[in-house]
Each structure stands twice: as structure tokens, then as C-alpha cells.
Amino acid sequence: MPPSPPDAPLDLRPESPEFRRDPYPMLARLRAEDPVHWSPRLKGWVLTRYDDVRAALLDARLSSDRLRPFFAALAGEEAARIAHLARYLSLWMVFRDPPDHTRLRRLAGRVFSLAAMSAMRPAVEALVERLLDRLDGRREIDFVADFAGPLPALVVMAMLGVPEEELARVKRLSDELALFIGSARTEGGKYARAERAAAEMADFFAALIAERRRAPGADLLSALVRLEHEGDRLGEDELLATCILLLFAGHETTTNLLANGLAALLRFPGEMAKLRAQPALAPRAVEELLRYDGPSIAQVRVVAVAHELRGRRLAAGERVFLMLNAANRDPEVYDEPDRLRLERGGPAHLAFGFGPHLCLGFPLARLEAQVAIPAVLRRWREIALAVPEEAIEWHDSLVFRGMTRLPLAVAPA
Ligand code: HEM
Image: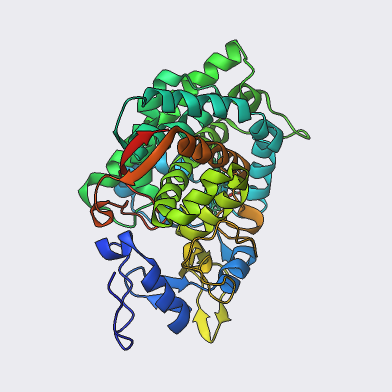
């Protein structure tokens, strides 16, 4: 985006192609000029400073329960049109506050545990090599469709015990669900497609769950079905909702981490060379890639208790957009924040959120990127964009930051 003259009014247009391609100049202006900004377009507050975003993620006056009021406000016929979305998404822990959130997270966390995620390392390594083997001999690839898309989906499917041949269906249904979750607009029948996807995903998991009840396996789906903790268990709809959430949350974001991460390394060839030379740098490199251009640009809250922030009055019921990617480039916190520096260290980024809703799957996402990115660099001696950077299309989403395609020219090692 060309820099705006200093006195141009702050006009945040998240749907514009300029913002989608490079939101950072606008986020920098918001952070510097109006860190608690009222956006008429978003009809909500936009927070961009690291301290404010981090504090907001911990603030019980801001609620995550933003879908139920939305669903409740719909008139009968409208509500009927998105009945499945309402039924299942209302039960996602990410959209709930304590005590419901605490309970859902504790139960799911018993099964989707750190140990279960760490145990995936050999499977992730094998999947990475298998996907790369399939690209042997190719000189041009679409990194999203050929690698970054399938890998995280296959990993979370393997954990849950969803058969691999369902990959195309899982991807399609997730993309359709994202039309509701990531987008602020309703045109073009997007909600109708998301509604059909929610219904189909629920039927799909209901059938798998029935199978696991008959013949339990070693997968997490069987464990979720069996799960009982201190006399509590997930109800039937909660079980379906949690499966849909894990499948959905488990891959769209990780796909974007891999693709945004590789694109960032291409923009900073010196850093890429460093990582090639020192693969042991991968854990730190992945944290820096998450900070530099994380997959979740914003998280949304609703004001539950009115309060003031930097002289602005946040009224009950108003929406607040916590711009994680703006916080992660706050110059008060990070030196030269617009530069990728794999050895940076420093305060933890907020790409996985913070506080009670801190991403449940972050150890898995980290693991996948730590394995996949060095493997990609090992496999290809040369990697370059196959189209000009301006030609790359970014998703039209307020929540997810990622590319629809990342065409690359590659040459084997
Ligand atoms: C790079 C990849 C990922 C990123 C950037 C990411 C980001 C996030 C963020 C920012 C939140 C907080 C939402 C909020 O504060 O309202 C979150 C929550 C969540 N994530 Fe992730 N995520 C990633 C991968 C995963 C994976 C692999 C899984 C599981 C397989 C997962 C499952 C979840 C779940 C279940 C929650 C809800 C937690 C709660 O509400 O307590 N995520 N994620």
C-alpha cells in the first residue's frame, strides 16, 4: 500500500485489496495515531498496541460470547436458515466465557493434550516427506494447494482418526465454514454454504462417532467418546461441536503459518540462508514467523461491562477487534518490527492469543512448522515466487490472514 499522506483521515477498509495484501502500513498508523480507534465500517473498536491487546485478552469485561447474541437477534426465518451453524458454533469453547469455557476446555484438553500432540512428531515427519515426495520432478508448485493446505488437515485428521481419503471433503467443508467465521459480509449466499457445511460436518462426525462407539480405536475421537472426567462428560452436541472445532481450527491457521512463513523467508533471503545453514534455528524461526505475519490477524470480543480505555468509552454490546498482527509489530516492544529477524527473541508474540483462550493447539502448530519449513528448504535448493508478489491473492477475511495460492518455482537440492 502506498504510504498515506500524514494528514489523510484514518480509513480502515479491511476488505480492500490493498489492506488484504499489506495491512501493516494502516495498522502502524492506527497504532501511532489512534490506538483505540472506532471503525464506522466494522462498527467496532480496533485495538492495535501490544499492551492494550494483551491486556484485553485477559480482561473479563470483554466477552468471547459473541455468537449467541448474534444468533438470538435473528428473526425466525433468518434463524432457521443458519440453524446448524447456531447449534454447533454456539458450543465452541472459543465463543464461550467461564464457566462454560472452562468446562469445555478442560474436557477437550484431557484428550487433546500436550502429550497427544507431541506424540504426533513421527507422523508429522512422515507426512511432510510423503507430500514432498509427491512433488518430486515438479518445477512449479502451488505451495498452498500442494503442501501447506493438505499437511495440517492430514495431521489433525490422523489425530482424530478421520480417514485420509476424506481430505478433499474436509477441505471443502472447512473452506465453506470459514465463509461464516472469517467474513463480515453476507452477500453471495455465503451463509447458506456455511450452513450446509455445518450440517454436513455434523452428519459426518455423527457417523464416525457411532462407528467408534461400536469399535473403539486408538484415535482421539475414540478417546473423546469415552471421555469422562470428575463425573462430567461432553454432551452429544458438544462432542460434535468440539470435533468440528478441532478439525477446523487445526488446519486453516496452520496452512497460513506455513505459507505466510515461507513468503516471509523469500522476502528476507538472508534470513532464509541462515535457516538453511542452521536448521536447529527452526524453533526460534517459527516464533519469529508467527510474530512477523501471523495467520490470525484479529480476534473479536464484545464489551460485557462498559469501561474506558485511553479516554474512549467502550459501551456494553460494542465489538472490539484485537489486532494481533498490529500488536506483534509494536515498535515499543520490538526493535525494527517490520524486519524479519529469526534470532530476535524478546517478549512473546500474541499470534496464538493469550490468557484463558490461548490457542489449545499451539504445540501442534509449532511442531508442524518446525518440521515442515526446514524440510522444504532441504528439499529445494532454489525457491522463488513464480508470480510477482502483487499478483498473489489474499483471503477476504477479518480473522484469517493467508494467501489463496502461493505459486513457486523450485529446483531440487
Ligand atoms: C499457526 C496456527 C494457529 C494459530 C495462529 C492459532 C491461533 C489461535 C488463536 C489466536 C486463538 C485464540 C482465540 C481467542 O482468543 O478468541 C486460538 C484458539 C484455539 N485454537 Fe488455535 N491456532 C493455530 C492452530 C491450532 C491448531 C493446530 C489447533 C488444534 C488442532 C487449534 C485449536 C484451537 C482451539 C480449540 C482454540 C480455542 C481455545 C479456547 O477458546 O480456549 N489451533 N487459536
